[in-house]
Structure formats: C-alpha cells, structure tokens
Image 1 (cartoon, rainbow, N blue to C red):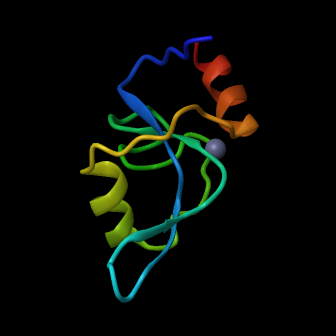
Image 2: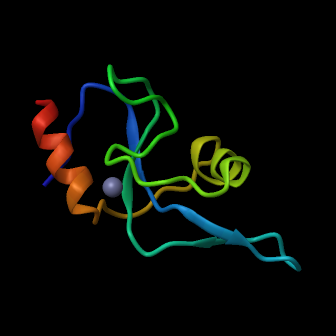
Image 3: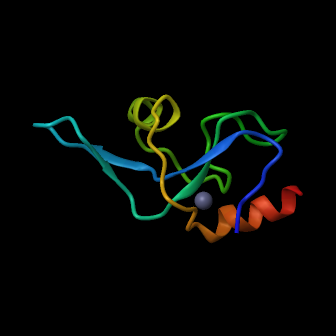
Length: 86
Ligand SMILES: [Zn+2]
C-alpha cells in the first residue's frame, strides 16, 4: 500500500551512531516517515511521529541530505499519523 502525504517525505531510520573507522552510520531498526517539507505541526527533517533525533548533524548528513531511504515505513505511530493527515 502506497503512503500518501500532502508534503514530500521518505522512509528513513534514525541514526544511532557513527562508526569511528569507516564513518559509516549505524541505523536503528524502525523506519519512520521523514518529512522533507514543513507541516503545520512538524518541521522538515523531523519524523512524523515525533521520534527523537539523537545526533542532529548525522541526521542531516545521512537522512535529510542523503539519497538513502528505507524500504518501507514500519513505525505504527508514523503510519497512524499519516492516516490522520488525509
Ligand atoms: Zn515514527
């Protein structure tokens, strides 16, 4: 089932850390809806459900400004919030 929102978004997982040697990101397990445009109550760069962003800089590099995206959204809170937006 395709998700639709009134703004641009992509599925993404939060960055839990960065590997020291390779500078590769360590990702969480849950894929959230990452907003690429502002909503009335959420800003671009935030997750729709309000999941915390622990490392803002890594989040910007590896999520907001990256071509990376997760396969699907698995966060039930994001999916529920997306339904409410319609
Ligand atoms: Zn979420």
